[in-house]
Image (tube, rainbow, N blue to C red; front, top):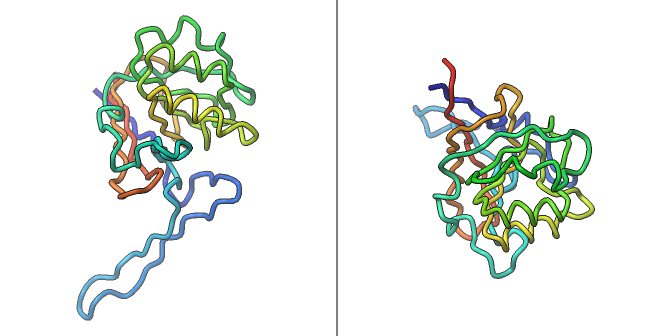
Length: 193
């Protein structure tokens, strides 16, 4: 078995348009102690999970999200890059998959029809290498479809070194009380050395 680290280094990850870039500042510690590092970042910095409360006012915050959504079998799929992912791009490829990870080179987003199809297929989590699961002009609709369908979302991963196939996903979000998202350290377990 091999561990594939699919998390981006926080300070090097693409930043969603309009968001603040994460900042890690070294500061002197207590006298005689080691230096400390102060992290300033949004809850959606780097590789992160969106809580259901991200777009649903009555949705669970990240500390209330069921952890089993972020752990278990996951199918990695290459989808067309630089365009909307449509239902036909997924049809016949996600049947029986509990979680899916979409590899597009970080340049593809779901359309509403594809989001509805993912939810209807019983997928429990969708992972993407793009900064968001939905395009900027239709983000709310895509997130809402998935979240109302009980589908967890993990965004901004890196899948370049991972071949299509079945793996085990571990992508637990930080337990930030009341937050609508949190950074994760996402890994896939699969074949290889």
